[in-house]
Length: 462
Image (cartoon, rainbow, N blue to C red; front, side, top):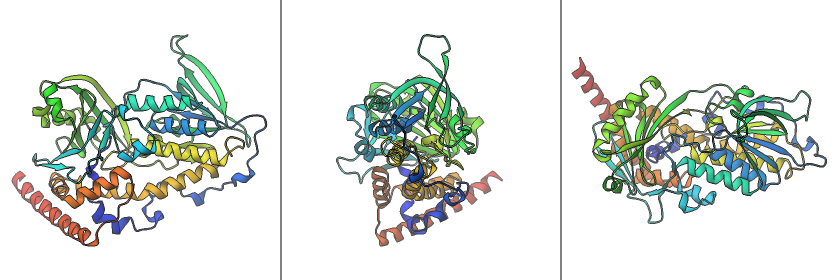
């Protein structure tokens, strides 16, 4: 999932949180680098008469990006994906910078959203997007299309893609030995597939929130959300409304800790919601989301129902020896917005680049220090973003009055500009000190009004 409006309060929080040192913003459950004893990669032996062999488990954006980068870097690459037609329940929003960074062709982008409507618990609607330039947009993709494209590109670069289910990882018993991977190969020749094994020098776990690779290295658990989504084919005249528009609904009715959405696809819309705290009520929240959007999707036919876990924070361990986690397997989904596609692809590419560099293009065995370079680079670039969005969720998603304040704040043009610039280009945009001060004052005012409203509503329930 992904949204663009969740950065609305980032400008007001920037000076308090983004200016702090990286360690102060790092979640306490992530194992610091200094706790591990790591050999220098210079001591890693050269590989005689063969190239470094790496298995990528999982074929989503993280796995596809990793496999392509590895293959281009002269690494013998095998990608294992259990479901090649997977349709993950995902809003499918990608930032504009991803199109350029990853060379995505425009024909895989279903819609170019230039208008976002934020709808409060009391159905006050705010239009977001007034500050976008003519060439700026949020891309909407279908995961089955994007994922297949990235895998195909990995194949074209030299990676081997296997339709299979990863089962188990046997760790080396002696230094520099290979890992043994156990998997079921679905080649169509045997009902239920064939049990097989392969030996590799390193493993990238890109196998999602329920990562078996993570379990294999004792990566630890994390809290997760359940995302529930229905793809709805609506009449053409109603689809016209969503031509360049997406909607987000907030309120206890659609989710106590997240939001509901209506995002446009090629010939249908995706209607969904998510929650961490009330997973058993997810269908109730989904029904409420449909009800809130009823007038705009009336007459629609549900053509697909999807559900999937979404991680809420990075795992305690993301690297061990020659195994690394990326994407959802590592926990790279932002709070408040639920964005994960870009960070998945970016982490996969960063991890693969670290392996290519550390192995000298596949000529040398890598070690944990090489993979730690990927973690250090990723954390330095994106940890502040995760921290700010975590705070925004705690401040603005805690009650309906707070959500009303959030939507009110989103009407501010300065907020919209800072939000879109940060989202589209994944950079911390320097703001105007005066405008930041005004925004801070307005934010406090909104929260004060929200708290007053909360007290009045409490009186009515007595």
